[in-house]
Structures are given as C-alpha cells and as structure tokens.
Image 1 (cartoon, rainbow, N blue to C red):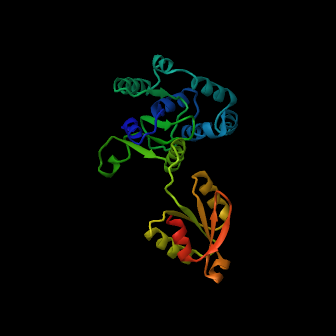
Image 2: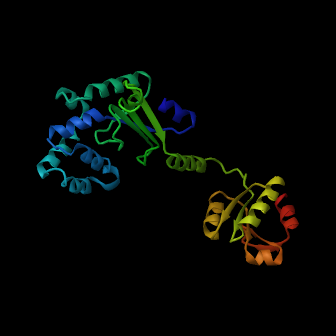
Image 3: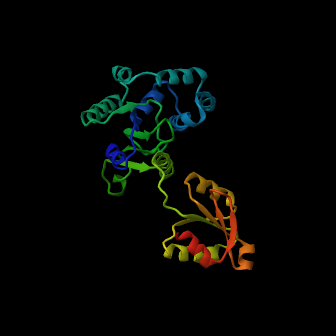
Length: 267
C-alpha cells in the first residue's frame, strides 16, 4: 500500500527500510542490557547524532563491552539473525519475501527503531535520497484490543507532510517553469488592509501569494518561482493611498493607485 501511494503521487526512487521490534528486543537482551527501552530510544537517534555520540549516551545503561557487542550485532545480516534464533528474524524474512513477490523491494535496516514503544512486530520507514523519513509505521498487537478486552492486530502508517512537501518542491523545480502566480503581496504591518486587497485582486483573476512581515522571504520566494511582480503595503502606502509595485525582472518601482495596479497586472 505504501509503495502504491508513493507511485500514485509521483514520487519515485523511494527506499523502504524494514526491521522488527521483536528482533531489536532480542538483540538488546542477548547482550544482557536491562534498560531495553532506554537503549532503543538512544539507537533511534543514530541517524541524527551518529554512532559516536549514541555510544557515549549508552554508557548510562551499559558497559563498554556490552555497547561494542551490541553494535557488532547490529552490523550482522538477517541470515545471521535467523541462524542464531533471534526472535522476529523469521517474521522479517517472510515480510521481505512477500513484498518481493508483489514487486516491492524492501531493505533490512537493523538500526531502524521507530521510537514509539507500542510497536510489537515489523516496522518500516520510507526514505528518498537518504534524507529524513517520508513515511513510517509498523505492526502493533497490544494497543487497540485493550479497549475491548481482546487482542486486535493492526498496522499503522503515518506520513511526514514537511518532508513530502520538500520532495514535491524539488520535483516541481525540475518541471518547465509555467507562470501562474502574478505577484507577491507583502504586508508590512497592514494585514487587515492587505487581506482586503488580496481578495479584490483575486476576484479580478490576479493570482497572488500574500506574505506578512519583512519582505526578504517574500522576495526570495518570488525569485525561486519566477513571480514577476511584488506589491508592498506599509505605512507610507496607506498614507498616500497608493501601492508600491516593483517589477522584479528590472527592479523598477512605482507608486500606483489600486486601479492602476489592477490594470497593470491584468495585462
């Protein structure tokens, strides 16, 4: 389902990483570390902090020898885990085989943790280009059923809107530029008046993006998306009952009435 979702929204070349919480628990238990949940929380920070800092943090819960053994185990492949009877290894192998039979490639990632403690089996994350996770989830057997006094198995998926929007922006940047937005409207402490002006412009079929505060970010956005004009609305413009219109290709500025701005942008 995850693979189909990303295919449907046009994001290609994703990598689906998989692991199993039973397997992670078994690995930690095999080196006789008691603080299992704390260790998993630290391992979940590997990508962000790097191995050296994580190993340093783990010294609160384990000896140096335990930490070294733990990291050596995390370098082993799935076949090693199965051959040494680590719980969860067989489940993970079955998942990889079934996914492959459906044309979905998944990669065993022994350091994938997924920080939530309610996961009980296979877990997964979707990444692209080695960046932060676009989506993730896993199986949990002991959460839903506790409200009905019986075990109900489930698999949950969540998506990172921030990461997805970043990827979509990258993909859009590769497409030929098509001019759709005519102007950025920059409100400098005049938000109420700017909102009314935005409505008037949009009702006249002039597409715009409205920004509030310092103009810098608005102008950077306009430059990134080749927006041709910027309208500034601050105290000076309110006093003069005019709008400052800047042609972003030439840098030329002029103080115009609202009617003149409409006429200019409708061309």
